[in-house]
Length: 208
Ligand code: HMH
Image 1 (tube, rainbow, N blue to C red):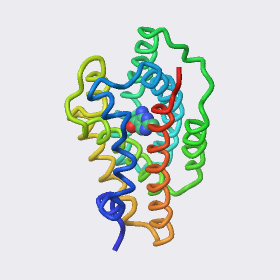
Image 2: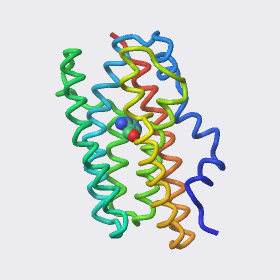
Image 3: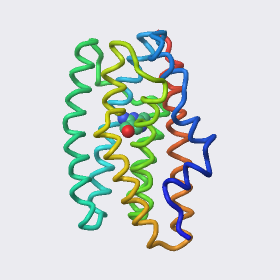
């Protein structure tokens, strides 16, 4: 039987907790996160999202016809998101022309490396990356200003619906693949989870 996104979560609950539960996020919820921590996340995530946009473009290039519509809506949302990041950085007078930190660099290289893998593996990675933020930003519960806007961007019902569609698309692609490809999909899922945990830790560890 083919693996599914639901199985990946079930089989790796502890790993997935590490990707989606972090003192950075609970610190936003309690208001104890320090500006240098939040601002580090904001700048590095902008750099991440630029590369993620390119990854989504490559996933779209490999997708079957029936997946084009949802992936195009994802790209459209990223067009808005990149401008939103620029506006948030300007409000905080942050310089987006900043080098990637090592963890961000590793995550970007990982995303670039997916290009040569089968579509089912790329679709699994895409779902996992989006689901990590969808869950991570919702788990602590309602956040105070100014963080509610950030929590809502990835926690809103429309985004949740998009992530569900990504899971269905990955499941559909995985169902038609050989066991080796399913193994690859699992490995990629675990790598996303580890990189997500590292990314929170990178921001949380920021010093002034
Ligand atoms: C690190 N993972 C990271 N940043 C994001 N913006 C997303 C995932 C989006 O889902």
